[in-house]
Length: 88
Image (cartoon, rainbow, N blue to C red; front, side, top):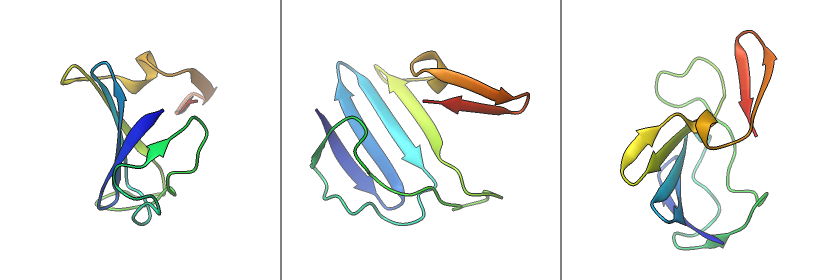
């Protein structure tokens, strides 16, 4: 289980062991309360188009021990086209 922190339209999940994932550009605040324990595949929010985004999407940011890393190095990656990469 993991802990959710909702910062406006950013969802931050602390997985423990120094791993924190942030899901940015949500279309609205998550329906989950701060501190809610969430589980794999649980709904946490909707894709959105905040800031300077030009299309709805989720920006996934991953920190390991306070250092930002490429999310595709820690989650399964599926390439659908030359320009589209899905991290699943």
